[in-house]
Image 1 (cartoon, rainbow, N blue to C red):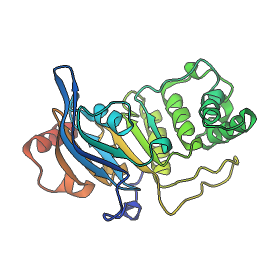
Image 2 (cartoon, helix red, strand yellow; image 1 turned 45 degrees about the horizontal axis):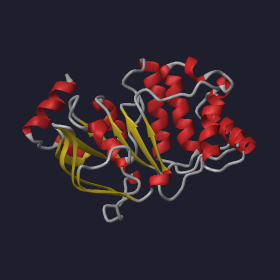
Image 3 (tube, rainbow, N blue to C red; image 1 turned 90 degrees about the vertical axis):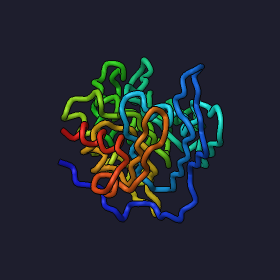
Length: 259
């Protein structure tokens, strides 16, 4: 089992927030997906979003990534161009795994030859160099998630948002993807030369992810946000969330997901 991430990777509580939501509502017609959500995320934090299906986790991630506008309130993100989002089922274009990564770099302004070289190095980092030329849509779910992580690495993402990234994977693939998430969370720069060690920066990547796997939350998160019916009910350091008193709804959720 993968070891918990060290606490010294946690962001300073006085750091200026990268993301700042104040009283955010999101409505889809008559459905209130989020109600009055106030949330600040500082550089280097690892924030897990937990709650039952329909609690608003996916909507909150999409708000943070700018995919869903707030119906009310204010949402500020400082690094919109340096964010990457991984979905439960990542979208793969009908081309090779290498091209799926390279296209993202090309759209950012890299020359095609450079983009392909960087894409191959990124695939090497996630252990997929041997299938670089394979059609990405023929890959397993775990391999597709690793391609998506390689794409985020190649783009030098400073903020990584993940929506249930391991929920549809088999146990082996879950371990592989979770290990890569942990490595990503503690590193800022991939290093484009195959075989080179990942270069750590002074500020690790900021990671916000949703998960029903509470063991995964304990291993990866520094902070836990519990949502219920679109409302933020609890926002605590990971140790306090699992060991301290909780609102009744959050306590019952943890008890139910832990049995």
